[in-house]
Image 1 (cartoon, rainbow, N blue to C red):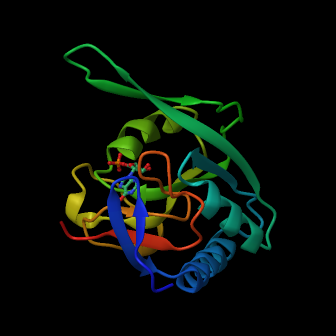
Image 2: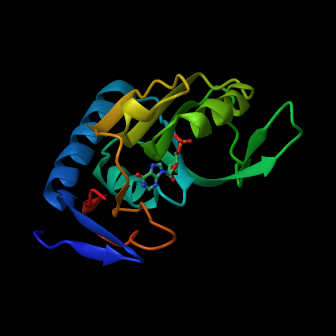
Length: 180
Ligand code: IMP
């Protein structure tokens, strides 16, 4: 993994290897197992970006657990409410469940900040967040990541489920945008 790659019009350089990702995903699985043994947690993976992270994390788990997938849609609302984020495909009963959100990356935190109250509304027993990546320098909304793979600087990344304008999701490692 030494080669720079071009996706659309931009150049990206190798940043986090598939081996490092595998190591951290495995660590997260051990932490979650330790905290959720006997609780049969329900994972909610947020599409599209989290599909690879969710799949790998779930394979590593050796406790009873369930998983479902949702897609978030943003709509332009009124001037006063701004963008409203709603879940498509959330048909699981969350009442009294131990819920863990699986997110690819927390950037400004807006997505989770707006989405979490919708889940709280269903009165789960607990609600935690597992994210592969977090960019604390670009965080605007207060979102607490409970299980985190990597803290990264405020630079655009792709690969391992993350895209640049639709491309790059299939890369098994993570690349970073070259300085412009
Ligand atoms: P937030 O609402 O600003 O936290 O943005 C979260 C979403 O923005 C993520 O789920 C990603 O889909 C996308 N995103 C944020 N940063 C990046 C990046 O560096 N590469 C690719 N997608 C990103």
